[in-house]
Amino acid sequence: MTAILTLSFIVMLPVVPAYLLFRALPSSGNVDGKFQGLEIKLGGAFAGYFALVLLVLYTKDTWNPPPPPPSAYVWRLSGQVVDSSGRAIEDQLEMKDFALSPATFTTLPGGQFDLFIHTQPQDGGGTKYPELVLSHGSYVPYKLQLDPAKMDEQFIAKMGVIRDEAHREITMRHIPLENPPYKPSGPAPERISGTAGDGR
Image (cartoon, rainbow, N blue to C red; front, side):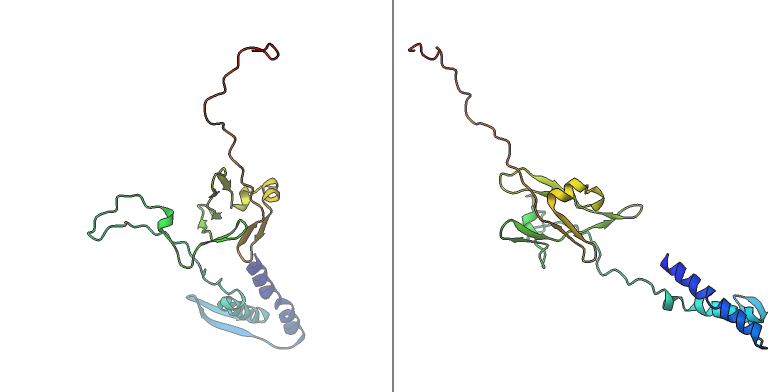
């Protein structure tokens, strides 16, 4: 939208001085030659204006430079792990078997962490965010929404969410984990016969 407004301003602004100059001064301008296979022969103020429009159109990269190419992409890596004899490893691989350098996950004291997430282009436009499930010890696993479109005001207030779009950073100041519901173990207690005060 900004590029269209800029182009409109650049193209329309010279109309006024061109009209005034050609009206006030006894001068003439001529443009003739071939353009895109067509024979062009123009005169007067419109000749100068046409030449200016051609100049603007052919210097588009100057007033509307293309955006720089993205510096980061999301790649998918798939493969198969085999032993020294070339046979597939039978045991199922686990996340702890993989490590990236630099690390995409760092733990800090006091329940703090630093995690890099990857987003993907979504069909029809937009960005697809992954879902994060956080679990620790005996706490109940907690599913965290990272898509800003799925974060309501209650979630933002509860988690203390701060988004920094310029630096691509999300901060959640307090993520509450809950203890599992109490489940008594062992056999159910037996009822004692008799009533209180009867001596039995």
